[in-house]
Length: 339
Image 1 (cartoon, rainbow, N blue to C red):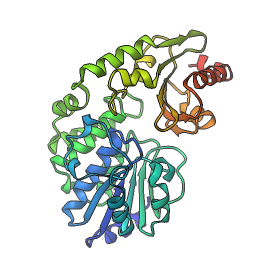
Image 2: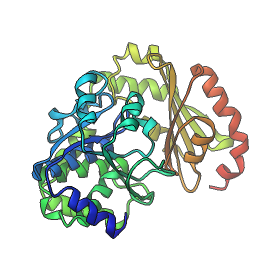
Image 3: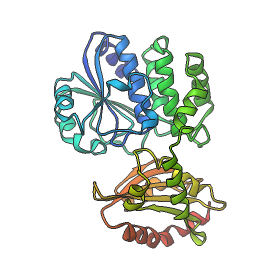
Image 4: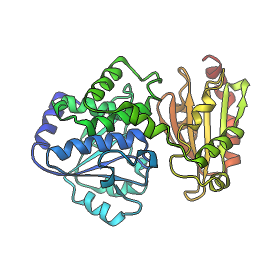
């Protein structure tokens, strides 16, 4: 995003507009933090702005400022599509291909609204007039902070915006431990705390409020953990029946894959979660060092993401998906053992 783009966006936002702000399907902390952070800024400028999520999001994010105003396309389809159809501007945050919005893809593609993309994932599609794309950034929330800085709007960052952006940076950096966490990231976090983000409260709300069933589900996941030492790989499976038995709620499996990655000498970790409602196996991949799970996911599981964190899916059974995963590992043996 160059200087001319920024100046044009300043002019665009100088007068009230109807603005839709869209995260990806199954929105996580970065998706909801970035969209709600931007919402809280745009409302200060008297825009008619609204976050419209493709589907629901985890309960541990439902305390964020202005979260009660979020529209859910899956359950409020008519109202959500009416707002999008009448929007002057659409911001797309934390995704870079419209298919990542699931059933919202068509209406977003057909919309005549001016589109602005802010995202840090690799290989973006060309669907937006203005694209702020940077794969080196820790999170889309960090990018929103930089976006506001480019707009000379950091004076508008209040406690509500600071809280939202802190959540996204914290969750997408694994509480500031991933390699994407830079000294600039820490300086931004310091500024957000100064602006009113309560770091202890945020961490407690996101990570330290567990249901009994979620802890039981974690125990089930760990009991299903398998290790393939010859490939420096570990993986977890969770069937639909196991999810049902333990009263699974959206977001309950967040972070489970990291337990597999934490094993000594493990370079690649995966979790395979059966979702019979969508008819897919949801896949999350994590890695250490330079091994790219983004490339693996794109090549084999219709997904993508970052070098060390990616997602994908499979349309076959849980058992056959795991078999496929194991079958491709020998072709990555050299790369895995070099880490």
